[in-house]
Image (cartoon, rainbow, N blue to C red; front, side):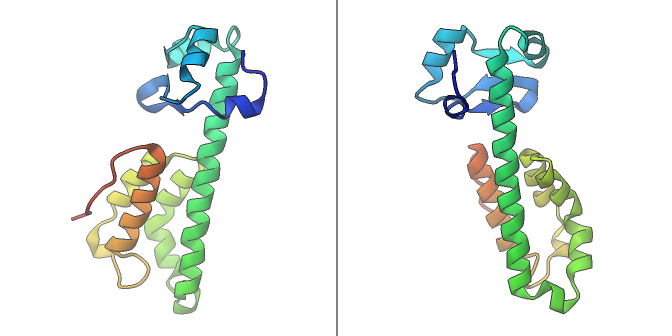
Length: 156
């Protein structure tokens, strides 16, 4: 049985497509041996929270990690905007209008949604400083790398 939050943090959880899966880690086999679990559907997960409290703990750690990562991505983007002069240029409101759905996805730790939303920004919204294909692609790739997805080569 997982005895501490530190031990729980060794496990990685993927909740995509409504399936709870423990991804490959060195400790994966130990966890499976102790808990006799591989995958749970979302309903099975809910049914097993009472008998497998460590599953909930692992999910909480996964969400905390996603939120912390999302927050770091958002903070980096906002700091770069500040350094690029977004506030002095009067472009902050226009950028907020374009990026608000992405910001909301990041604030809730919805990393997959953030990638989809960044990819969906039309090229007509690009400018030469704040929203460029290169900059968007950089952030898309950072998130994809965190998620373990293959990185996108180009937006066009």
